[in-house]
Amino acid sequence: MSSAYPRLTIRLFRPKPSMPVNVLNLPGLRVLDFKETDTDYHVKAAPTIVSKLCPHCGRSNETVAHAQKTLFIRDLPSHGKSVAVHLDVPRLRCKPCGKTFTAAVPEVDTARQMTERLAKWVGRQGLEYTYAEIAKQVGIDEKTVRNVFDEYVAELEKEFTRETPVWLGIDEIKLGRFRAVFTNIQGRSLIDMLPDRYGTSITSFLYSLPNKERITHVATDMWRPYRIAVQQALPNAKLVVDKFHVVSKANASFDAVRRSIGNQDKKRHSLGLKRAHKLFAKRQRDLDDEQHLTVSGWLNSFPLLAAAYDLKERLYKVYEVETKEEAWGEYLVWEASIPEELAKPFRPVKTAFRNWKTYILNYFDDERVTNAFTESFNAKIRRVYRDGRGYTFERLRAKVLFTDRLQKRVPIQEKVKVKKKPKFEEVGMARMYLMTHLVCEERAEYEIRTQTRQGNLGTDLSTLEALLDSGQF
Ligand SMILES: [Zn+2]
Figure 1 (tube, helix red, strand yellow):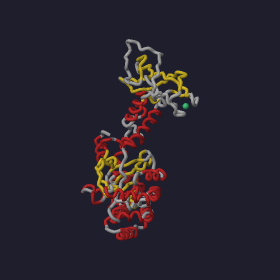
Figure 2 (cartoon, protein in one colour):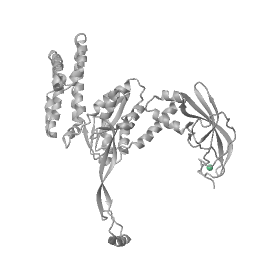
Figure 3 (cartoon, rainbow, N blue to C red):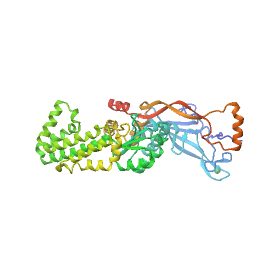
Figure 4 (cartoon, rainbow, N blue to C red):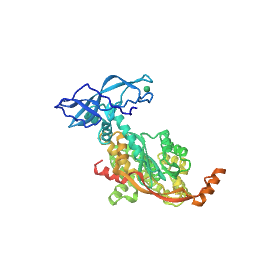
């Protein structure tokens, strides 16, 4: 009988009496020699135990050592120096299948050429530092850091499973390119971010959600692949076009008019009009006295700008009514009021409204579903991405999604259906019944019990925003 980890005695190096006996502090490795340079520690070591398990056929008991190999293994940096372990490992041959392999050493990831604790450390560091910084500190290449980090993130993903929301928000954020962002609307939390916003990515993400039948509403912008993905993967969910994205179409149209006026009279107005663009984007009712004065000054000088501004403001009226029918009525009034000279810049609003009518008007059914709260998060995260701290999308995503203190954990009460235990006198009857019939699920007696468990709604956006504002992110 041989155990899975038989001891092999390797007598290649004898420890010198003066040498630090356990400089590595890894029980699985025996230190044989030790050398220090200005930048590195070099440690010669041998495994105290190895696994003889044949990776080719899975048999462990019939292997023989037939050669020796020295592996170059990286370990945690120590005292500011990188650590290299020169590890003598036996090559083994499996008698039954005749194949040879390098013995596996506990605590060492031989494929990666690093200790397992280094792999874990690199993963964690990846949330805080760039791949280049970590690579330099450890003495490995950036590609290895990236691979280790990706694997670490995959582990985090398993650890941080999120509740599937009842109201799902799908939006995007431009970090280099457009990335899809998923939110729990009622929880005001972030569930996930994808590297892109392609239809196939969205669809497979939606399919991957556990208990996706519980999603009743999905709020999105007017990006067709979202609609197609939702209809395919969540056929019973109601699609609602987010109100924010409808009114921001009108803002974009107004902006086009503003820019064309600025371009016509470059010297005198272009700059001033450009500077006022944030004021124009606000709702008129949200302007203070001074801002109001600035805006009305511009509008008084340019009647066309005033007409465009009026259209932008009046589109909000569509959302100030109670029912779908009233909203559609308001929209038609609005559409009919577009002056001819503004037909072109405002055409995108018209096209969007007509193409997405059903989903825009779904907003007026039951509760008002909107994903607008993600907009301020979007702006803040874009700033972090751009400000030159070397964030890649993957790193930023992992940090946003898997920072422990950002998790919105809530107790979740669930009603679960459990089979009633039959009473003693019924057992005999039930057994009789089972012998003759297949017990139909509906016939069995159930009771509903309430259970409480800890659920994770995802990254709490207000906590994240506070962290981003404080500059500690
Ligand atoms: Zn074998």
